[in-house]
Length: 387
Image 1: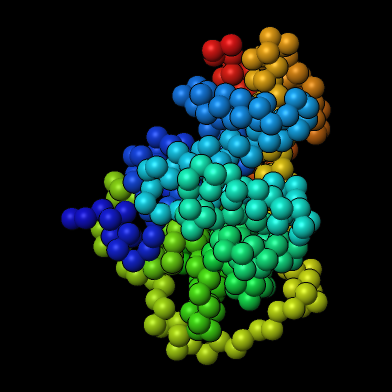
Image 2: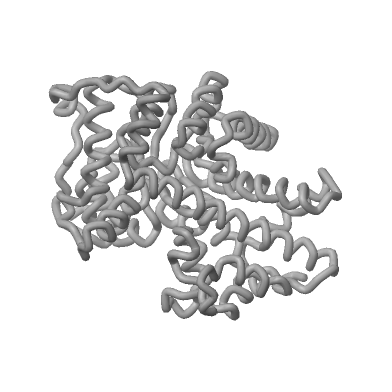
C-alpha cells in the first residue's frame, strides 16, 4: 500500500518547510519555503558554518560599517540558503522580507527587489523565487507592485478571509494561511485541549478560503502552512500546496491507509458563495473585528522580528570572532535579558513570541524553557567552530 505522503502528492504539492538543506534532500519536495526562524535555526547548525561565513565575507566586501554589514549578511544568508535549496528542488523557494518592514510598503518593495537582484546575479530565475511578505494591508500593496514587475510573492502570516481576498485582488501568486497558529489561538481562547480534525478552526479557515478562491476563479495559489498534527494535513488533502515540516513529512511517509481528497475545485466552483468587496476600509474593518487574526498577525510579526534580532546577533558574534575582536557568545547575557520579559531567569515559548524553530534549537533539554547557559551555547557555541 502506498504511504499517505505518496497519496497526498497525487492531489497536492507537498512543500518542505525548513531551512535545513539535508531535510530537503531527504524528502525531495517540489518546492521549499523558509522563514526567519528556520534560517536562524539552520544557521546554528555546525554543518552550515561555511554558508554563514560566506554570507559574512560577501557583506564585508560591500561595506566596512558593522551595522550595514550585518544587515547585508542577513539578506545574503537567506539568499545563500535559497540558492542551495534551488539546486535540490525542481520548483520554487520562498525567501522572506524583513518582518520589521511589514507596515512599510515602500521599504518592502525595495527589499523584495534587492533579494531578487541577488538571486538573479547568482544565476537563479526570478520565476523560481517567491518573496514572502506579511499579509498586512501595506504588505499586500507591496506585493501588488512587485507582481506587476514579475517578482512573484508569497503572502504569509495570513489568518483571515479578508486577508486572503485582498491578496487575491492584488494578484499575489501565493498565500500561506497559518493552520496551526489559528488552532493555537482557539485552544487558548476556548480553553480546549484539542479539536477533531474536521472541526479544527485552522482547517475550517483554509477550507473557506479555498472554496472562495475556486468559486470566484482566482489564480492565486493556496498553501496551507504551520501544521500541528497529521489530522490537519489529512483534512486539507487537495489544497493547492501544503508546506510541511520534516517531522510531519516523515510521519506521513510512515503512515498507511487510504487518503480521501477533501478539497475539490470542481465542487467549490458550484457553491453559493457571494463575492465580498475588499478595499482598504473594508479590510481594516474586517481585521479589527477579527480578534484572532489581529492578535496572531501581530504575534507572528513580533516572532519573526525576534528571530531576525537573534540572527543579527549570531552574525555579529561570528563576525567579531572572525576578526578576533571578541569571543563568540560574550554578549549572550545582555541578549538573554532582552527576551526574559518577567525576569524569572528563563525564556519561555511565549516570551520568545512564536519563533518555534529557533526556540527549539536553543532549548537543548526540551523542557520548554531556555536558560542563560542554553542561550549562550546557541549564540556562541555553534559559531566557535573554525574561529
